[in-house]
Length: 582
Image (cartoon, rainbow, N blue to C red; front, side, top):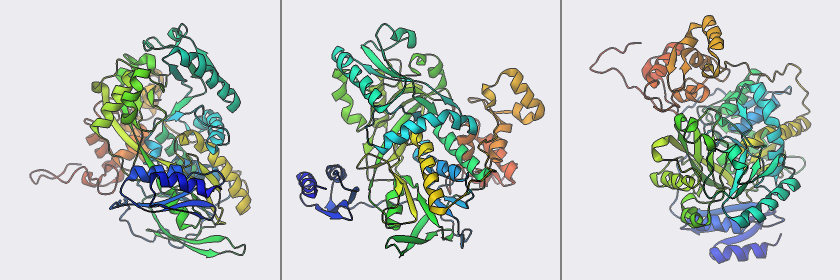
């Protein structure tokens, strides 16, 4: 590694930063008063031949209070699982499901009150084709494989999956003549299937109202879309069905390590708020906290720099009518006169776009902004307005009045901008699945398969012939024909009682969610599973009914039903000292 060159680049940004080699990594230390400088120094330290960047520069005066559950019990004390998975995002849940094919005792822990509450539910659900990636990247390897796995995976899990193509549209003749052929050539080199050029004349057969500046496009037909949180929950359900244990509200607080016979570090114990666990193997899928977990284990070779992005969700009426022509397209480049105007507002991102979700809404965004906070999912009016202004270039019909909600998520990016998927380098009984940012949803099933192979080798595990890949589920009744719905209602009248009118969700579907393998009896838990509250009114009418159904099903008072996180009580008691009716 050329450490001198790395130090020279870093010192141009921050001369007071110390640059040194530590166990094959480039380590940065010191204190700065600008997060932007810390981020840019980390990027400058990326060096060919190093294991990664350890950016330990402190931000002056900064501290982040990390959310941790207040629960303290001994539920996991003395557990000795074969595998401990840290992190219940889509990667962790895909790994749990894949490992449940083996005869292993699997324990997954997550500090949230449900799986998939972080970045795995805060993204557009796009199944990427891989055109923006490069040869040699772990990202490319896993995205191409993961993309191929999704149709069968979603059939087994009972999740919706659609091959809705992406378009990279060009606004100038030179882009059409030069960039389009280069993109097609790159696609061929990367082995991305089903790419084609779309002319200005042909676009009318694909999009009813393309933007006026359209000069041509490269269409990637292998792209697709899923509901990312539903896939994550389905993976978790199937893992639990096949014997895996998932412990929510469980945070890893530390690890005990010792020196092994081969000189490598060995994890002897993992401490949590629910007791000490002694696993044979730890799998680090902790998302934005994966570098912290790797550091606990003595195996850190990377640093996560949180990157926040905001997405907007539009009313379904906009999806079916005014924006129907843009439902399958992804707009990345802008006309030349618009690029500088929006560059600062949207930050470092692939470009974002306008796309239809599998549930029928239009999703707009995201932007991207570097920040020091790992858990800041806040949104701002300026970011929302910037996204609208940017995407109006491609979708003139888009207005702020069409937005029914918006959300932000934090991507777990490394300075190398690549995934870290490997066996432990310095620690013998850990596997890293870290830095899984976009396109992590696409890659997760393929990452899980490789990790299952390594786990089988490391632990000498055997295949479990009783593994069942199929997750029984109730179909979304709103998507069925009247005759099919009538059959369900005849079997269970609760399917005929509509609770959420916006999304046409029945009481029966809500009860099914409350009886799923991974049971999460909160309003948000039900919402992620069967969608009450995701329509135009955002739960304004159906939330009280959902609270009542949860209370009745669980035999608890309505005041004890939580929206989601610990302490998120919706009701505080009766009014005017009246008795609360149940």
